[in-house]
View 1 (cartoon, rainbow, N blue to C red):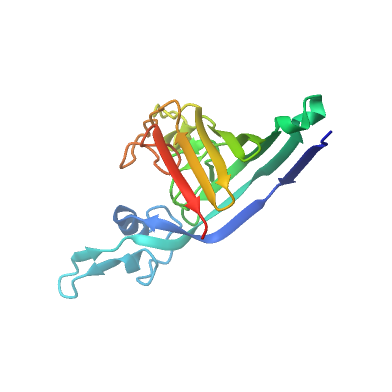
View 2 (view 1 turned 90 degrees about the horizontal axis):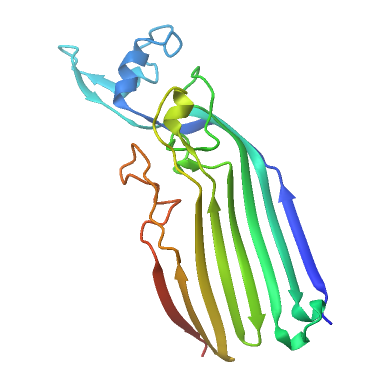
Length: 249
């Protein structure tokens, strides 16, 4: 009779970054150069970081060029818990034949407690955990409180099959973080299911087949984004099939 194997790992990372890169848009530079918020340029220095993004004609003083790009002015702090669970057992452990195969479970779960961002020095600190749409300090616009990738596997002889479950919790739109009275819609909870199978035909040949996004689920609408969604988080292609082989010579 085969024994049951279990394993679990958990970590609670806290990450803090000062002088994080943030995108400086041209409309922000001019008013902050003139200290419109009272903190960006209190001495009205021409060498201020915001003023340096503006080029003027030396003769007329007119603005001829405005720069925008990434500046190391933002800061953010995030904390949460990462958990990984591994569990497997031969079906002989529950009274079946040892030759009946093996069941495996693997799950990686992430919980983001806070994602505090200050876009500029002196700006208010806003918590974007559980929201989607903000890309000020990272290219990822989705910051769900919960997300998980879970695999249910069954192995028998040379054949391995796996059902994958991708979970993404519901998120409010970043506009609601900036302005709690905003009515910009967020996104609901998403569950994706994928399946794959591997068959080791002989020692040097393996066949593979599978499909992703079994339910052919369309991505959600995310207001204000160029593709009207988050292509890094959600499946924009739909259900796909694939087959392949691996040969060793």
